[in-house]
Amino acid sequence: MTLAMTAHAASCRATTGLISQGQLVMATNPTLPPLQYVTVDGSITGMRMQLGNELARRLCLRPVVLSTSFAQLTLGLLEKRWDIINTGMFYTPQRAKLMHMIPYEIQAISVSLNEEAALHLSRIEDLSGMSVGVEMGGIEERHAREADDALRAAGRPGLEIKTFQNVGIAFAGLRARQVTAVLSIDAVARRNAEQGGVKPVLTGLYPTPVALALRDPDLAREVAAVLEDMREDGTLEHLMAPYGVMPFPGHITVSGMPDPAKER
Image (cartoon, one colour):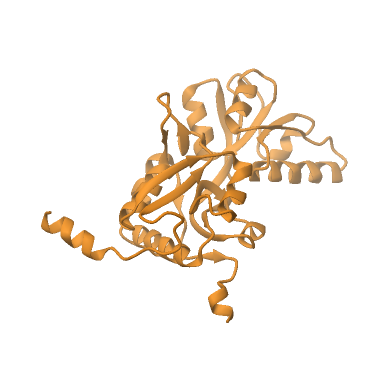
């Protein structure tokens, strides 16, 4: 063993709260290229998998990635089927009541059109009376419904919101002209534009923290400390920059349901 390897091993502490000793088990919904997706050979890759691998390395654990539907992520965490949800879950106060969340990046939403569309948009409400595709249950759907409510309250035609199982199918619908526009996070809109057939026309809307989610408070604190180290040494920004993603501004810490140990 080299001196560097010995020093690294000596810096490792016993990590508590794991469902399987020596492993960091992470669940993801790999439907958001380039952030998390399945390659043609069946492996799961993307920015968030790189992040998970670096977290595991710094915790001296073996990374294990499980693929599941978005609907199963929270239930599986609470049932101790995995240690971390690593899927780009937007932080909300409602989710923070169920699990420990660690905001670590900022994501915003884009509005994409078919690349041949001649529409000129300055805001989502300019899609009044038109069809909009969104991933079912995501924050994009929430903002689309808020815009729809605002339009109808103003006496204007609302949005025809069409939900899809994942954003990839929504973009397929946009390319096939089944919808006028698709709402997605910025990085996904940019990736789809590179693949052709669609173009983001509004970007940077509704910037919102994205978080890792954990069940165990001790493990959450350890992971937050590692992420803060990565922010301070520049690793987090270096990892995110190629994807057009911004790290969470300021100190990274656990936010969410109270720690029972502090209530005793």
